[in-house]
Structures are given as structure tokens and as C-alpha cells.
Length: 268
Image (cartoon, rainbow, N blue to C red; front, side, top):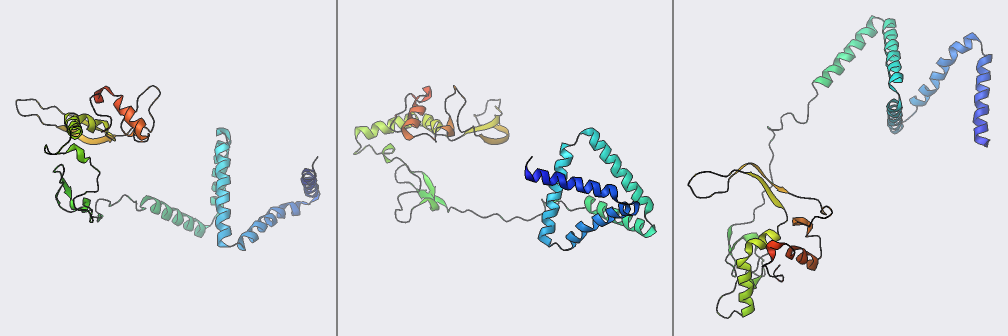
């Protein structure tokens, strides 16, 4: 038997023998004396020690109650009810009045405690304004309008976004390769747009009926569908799942789609 186990067992045996030899008066006063020991210890502890002790006792009590069975829980609740009933029967008029007043105050605070969601719509929130300037900066290559913020200070003719200048060329002075790039892009720009999309748009499309011109009409909320980082086994990569690949592998993945068969791989 290890030394520490032998010491604990020997100490328990000595305590049991000592309690067997004590008189009735000593047995009656022993619980009161034992209760004073933790009271004295708690009276001298600091605020940090009190908080740490309360947290430790709360965790230990929670674990004990989580591991108890339904029968043990029923017995515990019945014992607690009997103990409270006995304590209430021994209290005088002033103690009873103080207890009822404390219970009423606790119920009032629990019932009328202000919630974080009360008055949310009435609160004034000032949002930050993200102003990009006027939409009046025209690209010299494609003619698209840009915001003033997108213009580089050192290069007024260049914008923060990257574009392919060879896609927008004039007929004069353009090489055959540039014209081929332009024809390929303009003829398949919807395929390029779909292939380079980060997410898919989701909406409940409401198809209008009648003889008027076509219009895209939806009912409810417009949202973007974002899938997982990797597709399921046997499924091909789509949308944002392609952007985590290497450039050449991403091009190969996009060109593997039958809808992009006519697109130029170099432009892709």
C-alpha cells in the first residue's frame, strides 16, 4: 500500500475512534465547532479568494447535480423542501417579514429587469459614411464610368481595378492578336462573367405574364449562396471553390466546363 494512502486511511481510522469515544455533549457541540472553522477561514479571505472559491463551489455543485440520477435528484429536492420548511417554522415575525420582503424584491428584479432588446428600434445609430466620390471618371480604354476614389493620384488614367487593355482596342493600329482577343471576349463575355463569379445569386423569380417587355422580377429577398470550401466527392468545383486553386489549375477547372469551351484560355 502506498504511503499516502496508508496515511489517509490511518487518519480516518483515528477520527472514527475519537468520535466513538466522545460523550453526548461533545457529539452535540462538535458540528457547531466544525462549522466555525470554515466561517473563520471565510472571514479572513480577500475578495479575489472569495470570488475564486464561489466559482469553484459553483462548478463542483453543477457537476455533482449533472451526474446524479433522477431518484437521487428527487430525494435531494424533497430533503431541501423539508429543510426549508423546518427553517421557516422556527423563524420569528421579524425574520419572516425580512424573508418575504427579500423574496418579493428578487421576484420584482427578475420580472422587470431591463432587457437589451427593449427600445432597440428607438435607439439612434449613426452609420459611417463611405463616400467614393462622384461616378464621373471615364476609362480611356473601355469608356466605363468609375468613382473618383478609384482613380490613382499618380496615374489619373489608371484605376484601382485591373483591366485588360487589349480587350478594348481601336481598329486603327490594332494587331490581329488584339482583334482576336477582343472578338473572343465580346462574343463570350457572359461566359466569362459566369465563370469568374464568386457566388451564385438566389431569389424567388416571379415571371411576369402579359405582352409587355421582359423584366426581371423577384419576390422576397435576394441573397448569395456560398457553398463549402471544398466540393463533395465526385462533384466539380464551382464559384469560390475555384479561387483557392493555383492560377493554372483554376483555368483548367474553368475551361473544363462545357459552357466555357469557346472562351480563350489565356483570357480566362
